Length: 108
Image (cartoon, rainbow, N blue to C red):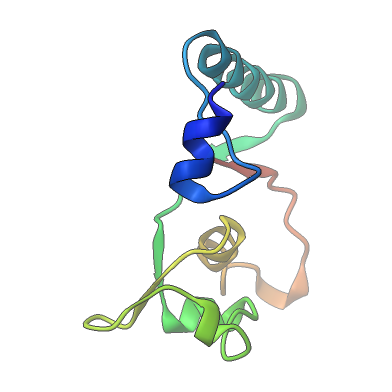
C-alpha cells in the first residue's frame, strides 16, 4: 500500500493498493460476489456509468444535487454517483400494480 503517493494524487485518507494488497482486495471482492450470487441468489449487474436526466431525477438526485453532479453538457448525461441510480431505473416501470419484486442484485 502506498499512502504517500496517494496523498500526492488525491489528498489524505486514500491509498494505492499494489502487489499483494491489490490481489487481496480483488480476492475479497470476488469472494463476496461469488458468495452472494451462489449462496444467496443475488444477480450481478454491471450498469452503465452515465445516465440521462430522467434517471437522475427519478432517483432523487436532481434537482437537489445538480450542482454537485458531474454533467456532460453536450448530451445532458450525468456520471452516476452510485450504482443505485442506473439499477433502479433499469426496473423503472417494470413492476405493475405495486407488487414487490424478489430480485436481489449487487453491482460493482
